[in-house]
View 1 (spheres, rainbow, N blue to C red):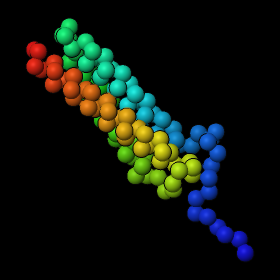
View 2: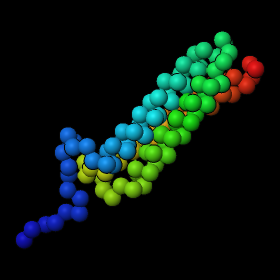
View 3: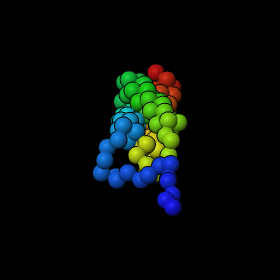
Length: 111
């Protein structure tokens, strides 16, 4: 008698569509974190509004992409749906959005 599993593990070396989308979302979040950190570090010199908006937008895109991957996943970790990367993209996107929001609020105070 054989046991049929609903979701079989897929090797980590394979780049499935779910994993690709979670990587793209996480990359958007990482870009947002970098730009938001730079905008916060340079807030005394002025002209940080553009960086703050970019960081906030990239963070929201990272969270949206990660949320989409998590919502569309039909299996757990190791199934190739990218659910782990989706959760990571959600966290990184949230961090980027917070940094962008902080930089934007500081740029409004100094302007």
